[in-house]
Structures are given as C-alpha cells and as structure tokens.
Amino acid sequence: MMRQRYILFLFGTITLIGAMVYMEGYVNIQFILCETPKCGTTQWRNLMLIMDGHLEGYEAGPEDNIVLSKSHNFMWTKFDLENQTHVNNISERLRQYFKIMTTRDPLERLVSAYRDKLETDRDPYYYNVSKRIHKSANPESPPGLASFNEFIDYILSTENRRWLDPHWKPYSELCDPCNIDYDHIARMETLYDDAEVITRNIAIARDRIYNATGHEGLQERRNELFHEYFLKLPIAKRDAIFRYYKDQYDMFDYDYPDFISDSNFHSNE
Figure 1: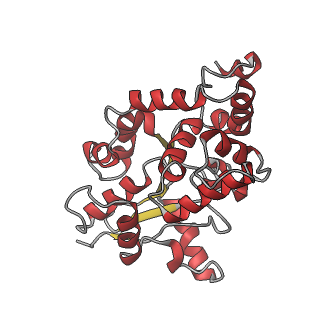
Figure 2 (figure 1 turned 45 degrees about the horizontal axis):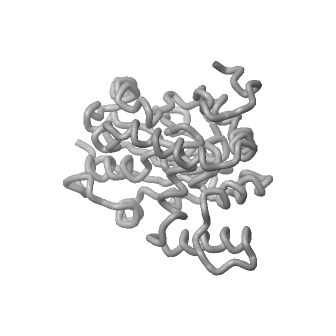
Figure 3 (figure 1 turned 90 degrees about the vertical axis):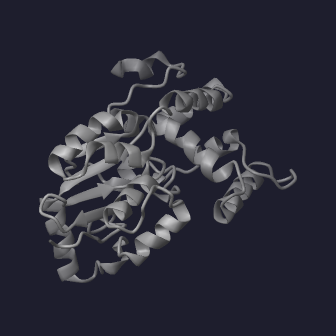
C-alpha cells in the first residue's frame, strides 16, 4: 500500500490561488482543499498530519502546524510555476481530484480574524500590524492596538481587495471560485452535513472530519460574538462593510446579517 503523501500549500492556480493543499496516495484519497484562513485551516492540516501518522491527536497549534506541514512537503513551494512540467502536474490534479473549498459567514470571519490576530499581542507580526492600524487611525494618540472600529475603517480604505491580508481577504480573491470548479463548498456552519458529501468522495471517516475541525457546540457562541462586535459599530459603517463583502454573501448563498439597515440589501431573503 502506498504511503499517503501531502504535497502543497498552494499560492496559485497556475497564476494565483489563495491557499490550497492536496493529498494523494491511496486511490480513494485524492483531493484538493482550498484553505481559507479562519475557516478551520489549522484543523484541516492537523487532520492530514494525523492521517499520515505525524500527529496522535489534534494538539498542533498554528505555528507548529505550519512547521510540520513544511517538513512533510505540504507547501506548494516545491512547485515552480515557471516549470512547465510542474504546471502540468498542477493542472492534472485540478482536473482529476475532488476539490473542496472552506467558507464561513464573511463578516463573522472578520470578527474571528480580529479577535485572533489584532486584539491581542500573541503573534508578534500581527501585534505590529494592529499597532500600525491604530497609529494610522489616530496619529496623535499613544501607541496601542487597533479597535474593531479602526480595523473596519482600515479594510474599507483598501480599494483593491487583493492587497488585504489572507485572514480578511475575500474568498473570491483566495480560491478563485469563478475559474476553479469546486466539487464541494464546506461551510463551518454546516460541516457535519458537509462531511456526508465529502466522505462519499474521499476515504475519510465523517466523524474524523468533524472532530478534527472542532466546531461542535460553538456556533451559538460565534453568533453572540458576531453581533456583539458589529452592534458596537455605527449603522452606516455596518452597511459599508457589508457592502464591501456583499458579493461574497451572494456568491456562497449566505443570509444577509440581520443588523444591516438598508432594506435593499435583503433582496436575497
């Protein structure tokens, strides 16, 4: 039996995709996953490491997870997009493998990204990003971390969404769903149901997918935090940030948030 091999963390379709991994080896385990940050990426990589025998549980945090992923050839950097043979290998897998993309409510994802990356000083890189956002919003104020209000202003001031950080960049800029025909969109909100579809196409136990991503019982708390952060914003700003991500709601058929004031926005209900 061939040993499972995990090859990449992709930064390109052939030109550019946001974040992709693929797994191959067994006949029934051939899939491509476009990982969108704040949609269970660490847990999905943990699942792959567990299946390959490099983890005994779901204990690897984001930093260790990335190190392990690199050491076991998860990262797309092994491929040279200037090399036609490598490009052909990418194209073949995109045609033949079961393709999955992960999503969650777009604005809920913003809250998660802010809380994880900018509200604390846990990560030195994002600690500095947070301080720069705060300083830009308040040049005369003492040093500090960005407020959620300042974070939203920062996003709204970025006209070209391609330049946003991957943790708050729109899905369409990360995974190129208009040009890649994904076989399944896995939502964080309905992952257990999505696992039913995924396990019919790749040989991973349904409970293993759901447990690896670790979301059971968390949806209610996520909804509370979502409303808690957004209801502190001025109404006009809520509408503005929704408008900024509205195409993502439409593209992936998410219900519009109930705190949006403009009735014209609710045409998808």
